[in-house]
Length: 95
Image (cartoon, rainbow, N blue to C red; front, side):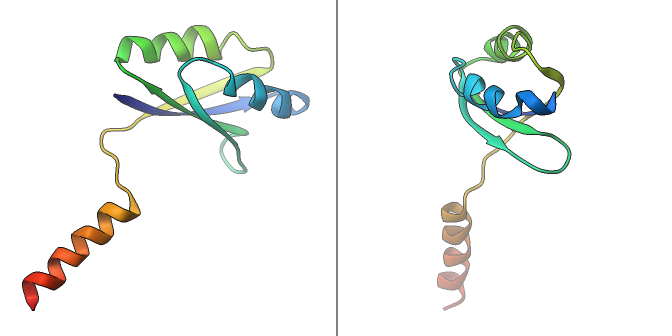
């Protein structure tokens, strides 16, 4: 499974409508409106890298009002649960 975060800059009047439109795109799992280096962040989850290219370059870029995107591809996922389990292992080894 390929996970990516697409940072999206948009025309201000299109931010809210784009969020809804992005959420309906196949391959887009979640959409967040954010402050900082982008207006929206789309979380993309697909099975193959080739699908990622299709989602970003054909489906996302086809939406009206997007002015720029930057795609971050995830190498490895970490969750709080996984990190807490790691620290718990360390406590058991010491005791």
